[in-house]
Amino acid sequence: MAIAMMVTLPMSQLHAQRIVVKNQEKYDKQWIHFGFLLGMNKTDFRVQRADDFYKSDSVMVLTADGQTGFNLGIISNLRINNNLDLRFVPALAFSQRNINYKMTVPVGPSTTVTKKIESTFIEFPLQIKFKSNRVNNYRFYVLGGAKYMIDLVSQAAVENDDELVKLSKNDYGYEIGFGMDLYLPLFKFAPEIKMFQGIPNVLTADPATYSTTLNSLKSRIFTVSLTFE
Image 1: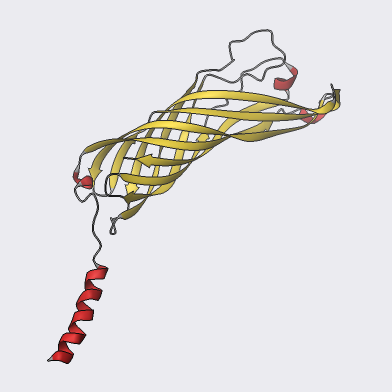
Image 2: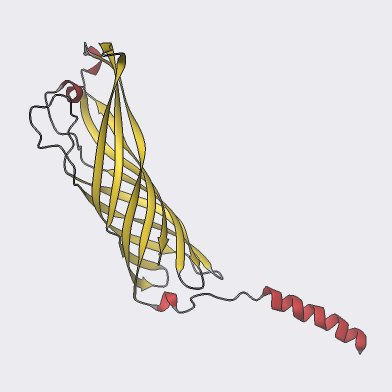
């Protein structure tokens, strides 16, 4: 009898150790909830050079260089079913993109000219979120959707400035990503990675030297973010 009790006690303790307490058990039953997003972005261009670029007598090499910025957003999430959500995540994004021109003759002290293009976007993404079944206190997800952006500091309307590379004020495209929901005792936390690809050519036609060597610029943005809901 004593031996049986000694065997039974450790087994019961082991079983108790395997029990995982579920945080936020009623969370996924809510039809709508809100949160906020903090993120870092790397904004870049897909560059298409002008058809006669290699005939240029001033620019020898042209490259785009993505820079790091940050995002602040508000999350509105509508539950469709256990594995599907509709999300609207308006955000403010600060970003910069550089275009490097290697000139055939020196411009000042160097043959390389860098055009820094700063943007402050108001973003309006609408996303569908596909979620796995919850396992203990986490679940994985993928998302996809469309995003429209307005550049608050666009210089497209500036006239008679040969030094600018002008971009359209409006941009739109598709976005895909993935992440993992972590259910903590007081809130839900998720690290997330997304990629945005712009559809339209955002380059504004201009006779300036730095624009005539370009045929098309399309936005490409990578974002790593943390969401709190």
